[in-house]
Length: 219
View 1 (cartoon, rainbow, N blue to C red):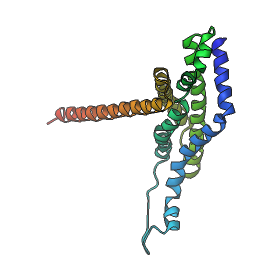
View 2 (cartoon, rainbow, N blue to C red):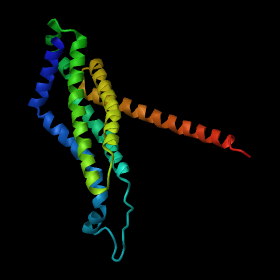
View 3 (cartoon, rainbow, N blue to C red):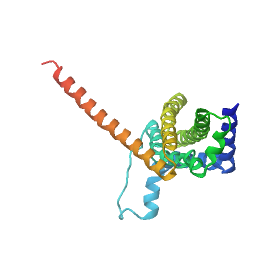
View 4 (cartoon, one colour):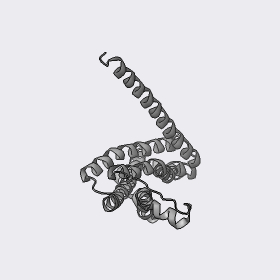
């Protein structure tokens, strides 16, 4: 009961701040940006006079699944920044202002307080990401060709796990410090470090696999 009360309170606060409106709109903008820009790039260049007289600009049309994955890459950069911004003061701000102490003085467990806020932000962000990817899928279908709906749903489901991980990092940093700006910095830093480690590991592993394949080639 305590958990549900805090969850509803957090959702109501998001509604009062219009987060249930502007956060989905921001993710829709991020997700449709690349499909529209890629499709209309020749017209954009012609209208801005970016080509010399007589020059032609032929861009091969990318496959529809690749264009859809561009939307996910946008969420992976700008979207993660938005997530960090809207969650940086979730607990740290209340700890700094003393609101958290007033809530925890009552018979409310710290775990219920943290997990309810975590669930409220997961609900908001996952809904926003899903709406944004559906908008991207619509424009990709319209402009580039067919993309399997099963492919879209599976991609959204797997990427949703990463989004939950990002929110969890931010909420953890909220419990560690009372300064929202520091929460933002630490969250982005951890994500960048993890992405760097992943890239290094993938490069190393691909090199190992390539070396093994060369060694085992028949003479």
